[in-house]
Image 1 (cartoon, rainbow, N blue to C red):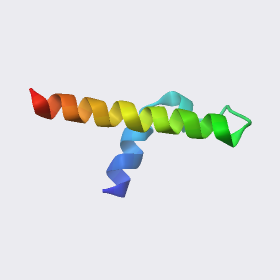
Image 2 (image 1 turned 90 degrees about the horizontal axis):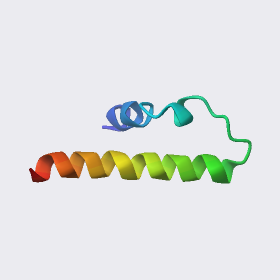
Image 3 (image 1 turned 120 degrees about the horizontal axis):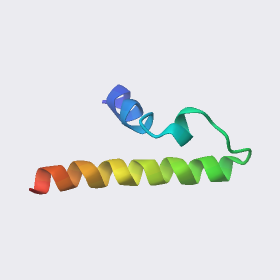
Amino acid sequence: MIERTIAWLMGYRRLTIRYERKARHFLAFLTLGATLTCFKKLHTHAT
């Protein structure tokens, strides 16, 4: 399950290569990526 989650998040280029100097910015992109991934999965299952 963890490997699948990491694979989903690595689909976002900004998370694959860390350009951000501040950890806070990286965490924000990580949160955004997780939110988008969950939304896509929920939206797919709802229809």
